[in-house]
Image (cartoon, rainbow, N blue to C red; front, side):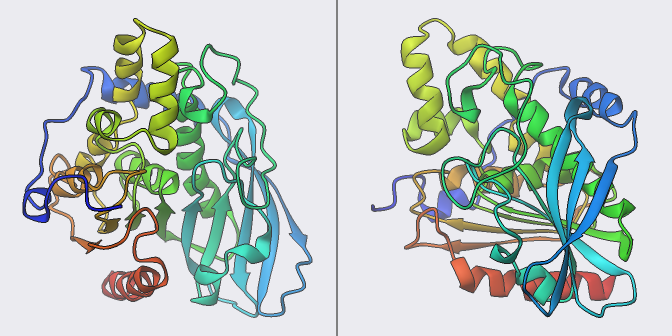
Length: 330
C-alpha cells in the first residue's frame, strides 16, 4: 500500500483543532474519582512460567466499576532494589496472553505490568481473562462500537479507566519504584498509553506507537480498516446515529489527552499505516503537552515505507535507549 495520508512535510505541522466537548475534563474527573473509591490491588499470586531469568505474578486489580481486571506482573529474577516500572497496554482484540510472550521490558531490567483488555482477547494472540460485565449497551459486536451512542456506556470509557487504574496498581506492588512509571503501547495500546499520559499527571514517561483513537474524525473519513472500519460499518446500518457516535468518540480523542500530558514522550509511526492513519499520531504529537504548562520533552520517529507494523524491533531498540536516558536524568 502506498502512502495515502498527508505528505511528510504537512504531517510535521499537522495541528487540527481538538474535537473536544466542553465537559471533557469533568467527564474524566468524575469517572476516575468514582473508580478511585477503592484500593486498586486485589491479589498477586506467583506463577511458574518455566523461565529462569524472570519472576511473574498473576495480578488482579479493580478497574472501572470495581470490576476485576487481570494482568501479568514480571520482574528480573534476583532483583532486590525497587525498579522503575513499565505498564504496557495490548492491541485491539488481544488479551494479556501468556507471561512469556512479552519479555522485552523485564529483560531490560524493569518491573513490567501487562494489562489485560476487558472484553477482548478473541481476535489474535493467546487470549484474555477479563470479561466486560457492562458490554450490553447498544452497539455492534466489536469493542470499538460497544455502547458507541452514549459516552457513559462506551467501551473505551471503561478500558481507559482500567488503564489508569493499572498505574495505581503497579505502584502498589512490592519492588516497584513508584516515582518512576512509564506507560507503553502500540495501536490500541498506544491510544491507551496516551490517554493515561493525559490523565495521570505524575507519569514519568510515555512510549506510543501507531496510536488508535487519535484524529478519530479524520481517520473515519480515510480508512475502512480495523476498528475504524467497524465503526463505519455500524453507522452504515444505524443511519442517523452519526452525531451521537461522533459525540461519544470526542470523549476518547487521543489528541485531547495528549494536550494535557506532562511526561516525556516517544512516538513511532508508519507513514503507510491504513489502520491508524499517521495524521492522527502527528496531531497528538504536535499538540502533546500544550495545555500542561511544562513543555515536556518529546520526539517522533517515522518509518516512510512501513504500515501499521511501524519500525518493529528497530523502533523497540530506540525505545529502550530513550527510556534509559529519561530515567537516568530524572
